[in-house]
Amino acid sequence: MKIQKRSTAIAALLLTATFSLAACGSDDNGDGGSADGGSGGGGDLSITMLPKNLGNAYFDTSTDGAEKAADEIGAEFEEVGPDTASPDAQVSYINTVAQQGKSALLLSANDPDALCDAIDEARSADVKVITFDADTNPDCRDLFINQATAEGIATKQLELVADQIGGKGEIAILSASANATNQNAWIETMEQELADNPDYADIELVDTVYGDDDDQKSFDQTEALLQNHPNLKGIISPTTVGIAAAARYLSDSQYKGKVALTGLGTPNQMREYVEDGTVTAFALWNPGDLGYLATYAAQALVDGDISGEEGDSFEAGDLGSFEVGADGVVLLGEPYTFDADNIGDFDF
Image 1 (cartoon, one colour):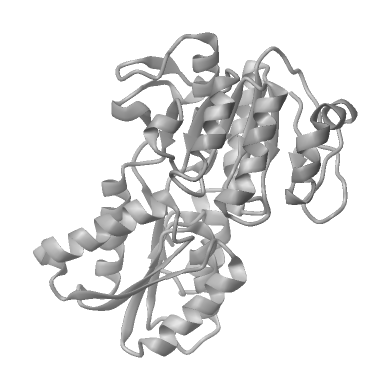
Image 2: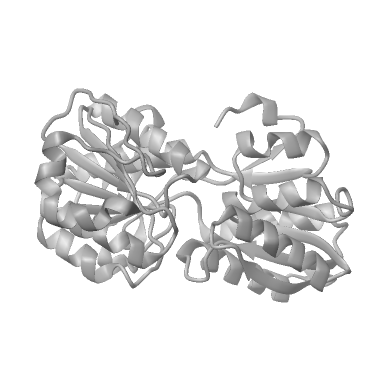
């Protein structure tokens, strides 16, 4: 398997010197220096993974899972991506994948529609496009590997915050970017649940803010929420960057133990905050499994084992068999709750 990582700094260069870079194996490690990406078996199947942004612990884990699957199937694999999570920053990478004639693109989309023109170009060049984590318009891609249903994720987070604040009080949401498809779907469902479910009649959503999956901005937005809403009882952050930044702020503030924080995070980034009492419980799926599943789905599409139609099924290595649902969606599973009793059992 051949692994390469490139950052935003060389995006423009890739557009004009794609084959030259591929030949010499130049890589950018995201901080202005170069780093060897590693090498391995390679083969006829070539896969590029494009997360929302590099340097994100969540996507680092999903890439690890994809790399593992690529090793198992003997595929050539590379990860590329921008330093900041924006749709414009992803377009050049999609264009490069089309120019290189890659077999498949694994994409976590920063916008449901803004990337569709570039994706169409890639698909017209016979690149199979599999979205994971965050989807595009279904017409833009071949498959979407969904971590869990929007309803399941939204319901889990509301259950957690309601339990932690005793079923009443003001809450706020610290999201990623305002255009993030998955975040907006979860927030919309949470808003509907709060309006319709009598169990949440005494809970009021007073604000939704955006940290753009940037650590410092998410930290600052947490501070602003607490200053603007002195009666705030809980924060939901359905983004791994946001929940970690919010936990860091709360852990060293007067609000520790008084304002509940839950959402979606990885065990490794949240362990210290669970152990010191800043966070009681949070949820997530295994992002490594998400990348792993996306890679096997790419293989099935490229090999012609599936076409992406509802009812298609394929094998995904250690994860077993999966079936394509409506609108080309493949579901990994339901979110899992992490707390002080079990967080030590996980390492990702």
